[in-house]
Length: 219
Picture 1 (spheres, rainbow, N blue to C red):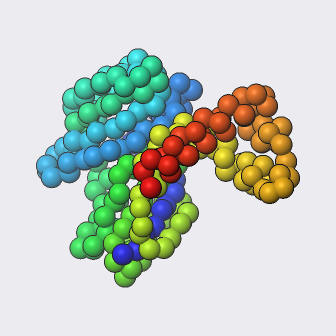
Picture 2: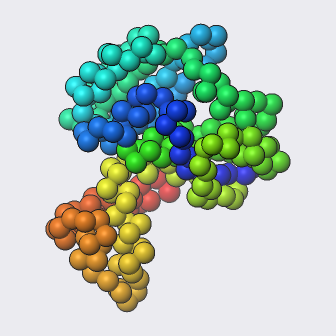
């Protein structure tokens, strides 16, 4: 069973308006598509976990013609669930045609970040994986981040981290912060993150705490 992790970037004309809102509003961080029902002819039902400002999101979704109905449920001061009923778009149906007739499954969540990325994980037969990747719209910028045999889902842990907590460990690896012996200190991480050393240290500690706890208790 093959596994692929992708990062996709759609041109503006193909983006859902609420996805563009996530990108453009400073108070929004990311949206995680947790589940979906696409069985209706004229509308889709989707469940998101949103990290960002609830009021700003509700103001935007209230004025969006594609949205037929919605319910928002707070999770914390910085996140909430969004259950949304929205009208089908032709561009979404065209995207899904790449998967038709194949064995490929999408592993939730699909994550939409504030920098415009759409991150998703796929599993299925190797021959069908090639069909799906080749069938995606050529206007969509695609980067294959990881490919191999499917083992355990990594996205659940990753989605628990904030955007900065996701970014900080990657930068720390790049600058040698985790090398033995250590090549660079937290100041080098802070420089790449464009923040104070104390802030970079906090991002790293919070990310490390969640990652280590997950490894200890769930592996």
